[in-house]
Image: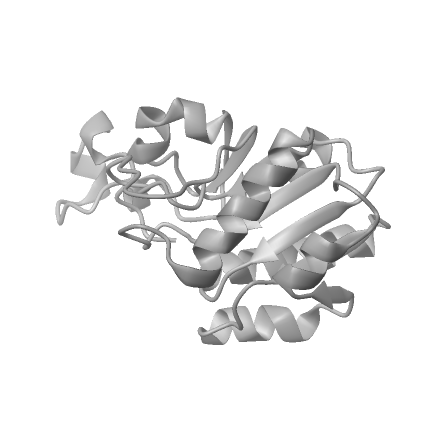
Length: 195
């Protein structure tokens, strides 16, 4: 599994799940890591609001805590924290519980945790790179399908970027209506895929 090969997970992993499909990704990754013996805790920052995220949560049978419990845990700083709060469709400044979770990630990072963002660091607009409020500063961003333009514009927030092929094909990186066979790849189109 790519996530495991990119980070040392012997000390466990804390995954923060938001309400959308990026949160669903966190639930899926948590189940996969648990299945291979990694000590995993999911912090449910907000309950899932999409069918895919609800299904992913239902398939996870491990430890789940709220943000307050994660912050109060006496076990210290987690070695790896995964950001599954906001995904590619998020715009504007993070608010309320999501903003609080980003502040918590920032605190764990300051204490030495390695931060992994799923698809894009929360608070960074995946298309434009805009960061209108709080944002996650990742050591590693594992992005799905294609590298988003906003990640390249905000390398300090994205850290190392690894793209994972999820079967969308080359045409997914371009929203043009021309047949894929008649187009040449255009760097202007990076980040237009919707995962």
